Length: 99
Image (spheres, helix red, strand yellow):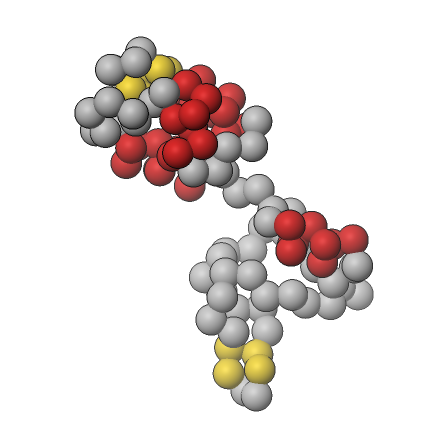
């Protein structure tokens, strides 16, 4: 199925770009030009990034190396993993100790 009709870019091409490390519509566009003409496909690209993106950020990878957290853990991003002074952290990623 086509994601970008202007440049005949398919879902598979966008997924391949995401698997290759692209994590924004701009990075997708640099690889295959999707979203660079009329822009009507940008929302679909954003949705695909949300579905297939999910790569750990450098901070999460460092935390895993230090044994503080598992960046591959299946945890909802909107759930706090820790509290500070009794208040839950309002961030998508909170470092935590692993046993």
